[in-house]
Length: 604
Picture 1 (cartoon, rainbow, N blue to C red):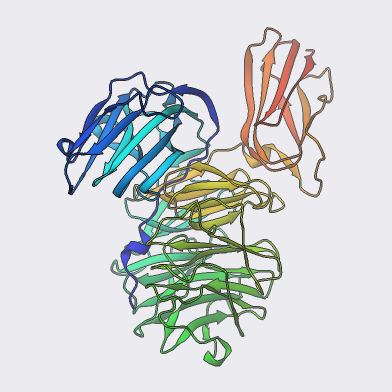
Picture 2: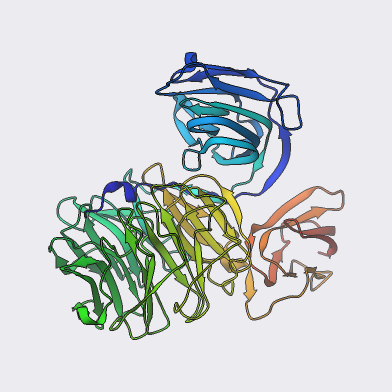
């Protein structure tokens, strides 16, 4: 079977949010719209509601409808501009043939769509009781209008009630990649150096944290799609290139920051589909492909890619019928390595065949492999593992995607964990109803912070994956973090790259080895001071924090920190050279957990 483009275009950029200023979203004039509005009745219905008298409805008037209708309204961006909007509402349905859902759209000048979500990837079908749903979107500064409502595709009936909206504060910022092609892989070396791979044989690199992205083509022609990257440093990186439809897999290397590229490996055998690459160090690496001639194609190198050697087929479990080596096109992390010898990758299937989802494991740099069946569903269509991460030799996570079916909130979550190095896997019961495309541990957090991108939005965990929170409902793909304050993601519109907009990592020192038992804001030292002092604090649980300075009248003078930070002990060196002598206050707020204010004195 050949892989098709649809597996690699489900990408949208990521935005992280905090919530505030909840309000009812019903003051505007509502009206009918859609591709077939005349085939529906719609309007307000105070007799059918979920606790308020502001319910709306939409119901089909004819027996067959090839299209949709929507009961909708519009508001100005107002206070949402430059931040985001989170909309929630209760919806119930009766006999919905195709699907129904909330929808939300943000437009710019000339009616250009800036962001959009209609719950098409998590549809409401059939007959359902009242349930609350949400949509969270970015509202850029140049937004001109926000549109929202309830949508019904095909026949049936749906009601909406309890609609509310609130500000969602962004902590991701859009960067200019310079291209309008889809980006499939991102690898972050450090806070400044990031590599990215796209289609049309395009690569991207930044060495200033994304302020400027350089772009060029690696290969002659434009048939290569770069699904995965192993980035060693600012100058050295390996890119896996693959024709969309298989049959031409390549490995490229640069040692001079992209000025020159060496084609290290090429395979044009029918069925070849190189999909992921990873390196333990600058010399030892691994790459995987779908089965070729009845066996998985796995390549290893011990000399920085000068030679790539195929692992003997007898050292790899035989592929099952129609089995792939995971799902590429989602971020290039279906293969992962750890330590000096450990490696794992997952499988996938292009058709429904009731075969198990398996994860393969090696403990000798890929020379020998074993496979274990997971408890993930054996039914479904185009399904498999697109992403695996390990924090050490024993503990890891793997995500599951079914591209033909949306996640089922009543079904098993699509996240696996292992505590024995991949010998066995269990489902994470507390995970959200989303299908992960990329999972990333955030460095320098003792593996307590995790981000997940998916077709249903982005989520994060601050406690190592025990509990999760949805951050937005836009689609995401490639994702990479270099530190708690330096992360990048890519997605739609094509070519879009966003950067985590946290406090610069150099300004806050994290003492990782200590886990504070409580939240604490300590007295600055020295105090009084002129002009510099140190503010120290402890965070018992990861979260979004603010540290602000106020004058004696309570006026805000400066925001010194506004970012996500993992649990730990911190200190910040505050320079007051621009302030006059006098009494000032500094306040620490940790989202939903802690707030404290202390006094300091500047004497000049």
